[in-house]
Image 1: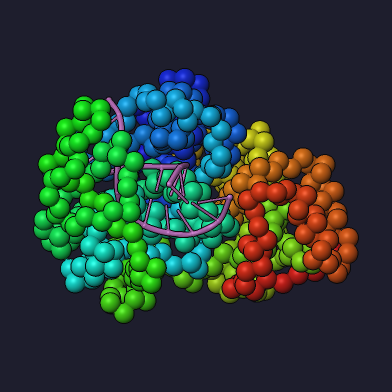
Image 2 (image 1 turned 90 degrees about the vertical axis):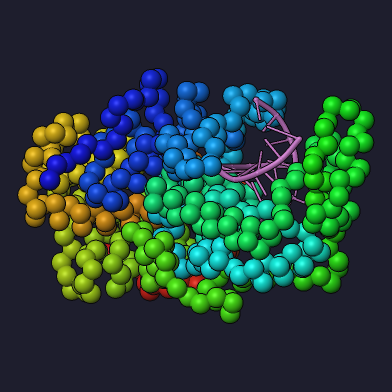
Length: 491
DNA sequence: CCGAATGAAAA
DNA sequence: TTTTCATTCGG
């Protein structure tokens, strides 16, 4: 077996700045499949993006960076090849406020949220809605035939609920932004799957509405949504426009009907496996390596994390240790992470990331990016007791033994899950635009540790200071928890 | 009614 | 090349 060096081999970033999401995307896409560490030169490997993206980097329409690889519509027949938007449009200039409001993700949603209980929409069932159901939808929309969703809309739809839960807010603008950021980071398998679903959706849509043709309205038309014209209305008033520049469409634009007050719209359970229309059937997507629909490993949701990523009960202020869990979320709690029950198992965790070595690598160190590029790098380095910048060619030779590989893979998996929790915390803090000064953080921790009984009021006051007016709401911490979390015995 | 995202399709 | 519109629902 040959060890392939992961990362950008050929064309690297011309400028000194990294690709940001691209590197992380490759990290997650490749490392999770091959289970080998990445070597990342930049010190931002942890995924905390503080600076702005280089102007050379590929960006989304909102200015965020995007993956470098092309659209997975590979050599497909009719799909257009170049999707690159115009370099500069007036709209782009106008929206050039340079403030990327949404915090940056460090991994695709399929990875970040894989342990959540919130189900993912059953897209297989959704795109395979029978024509009868589609006709009913059209009827419920007063005859208006909607466009089939493209791959991204399907993706957004599939992950909307989870994204909301993960972001702890219901704002769909944020959902869209997060999904838009996650989409290019998704591994090719996932994107391919959603592209296939989009193709199926177009196919079934066409079969259900053979005469449908996309006929967008003229921009200047002000989009008079109130008026209803039937699906294949005749060409009529569209040609009469003041500017005269516009050549009327061959088919009159389909105007959305105004819904009647008592009109019933599509049930939001449609498309889920719970819908009686459909039978539950596992798809390749469900069985993918990321276990998208894994319901058995919930992320504890009634916990908070301190500045070091250590979980504690926000209501009592006590630090927590998870019982009978496969995972440890706190870098400093030496609970065993083995898959076996492990109640009396000796913690082999010594290092900050659950490593057999004795080198302490705190989260703060990671955050600062001083000692290690990534937690992954730290883990790998400790495994091999090498410096952080050792050449990987040598390292690969050192770990060529199968035993060490397996050990590493296991540690990698544990680190992955630990990282998820950490990243989630980072996201929420970032979403709250919170930067914790270490001294403040320790004060905050002290205030939490002092009383055995900490009133909710005190906590919320403290949290209110932390999160300010913005994004994070307390619902996240008040949600019921699935795994059992208990106060850690203070010593 | 706008926005926030990506992509299909039309102009 | 540029625009609309699929989705969603809080502001």
